[in-house]
Amino acid sequence: MKLSEELLSLIFSALFGAGVVYATMREKLKKNTVDLNGLGRKYGRVVALLIRWADTDAKREQLANTVEPK
Image 1 (tube, helix red, strand yellow):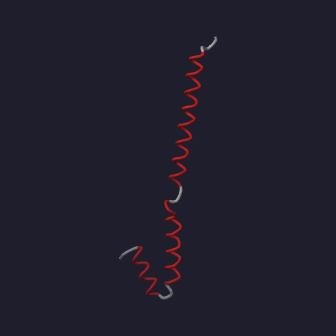
Image 2 (cartoon, helix red, strand yellow; image 1 turned 135 degrees about the vertical axis):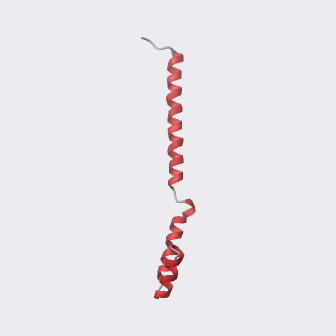
Image 3 (cartoon, helix red, strand yellow; image 1 turned 45 degrees about the vertical axis):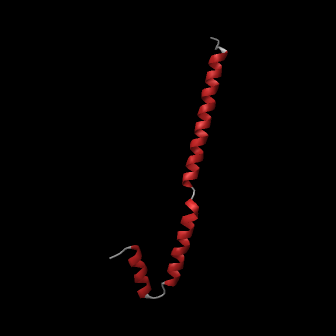
């Protein structure tokens, strides 16, 4: 059974289109998993600074209350 040129062209176009859609989906997924403006890293630095700051029990209690209010 021979396929006509039109059918081969249609199949090729469908495969090419599927490849483009797949690549676009992968790129969007990659962008969504990237840390937004480095906020995770900045948050980690703030937490580390606060831990260093909390050298007394009163300061540690203040930190605990900001994270988990009573």
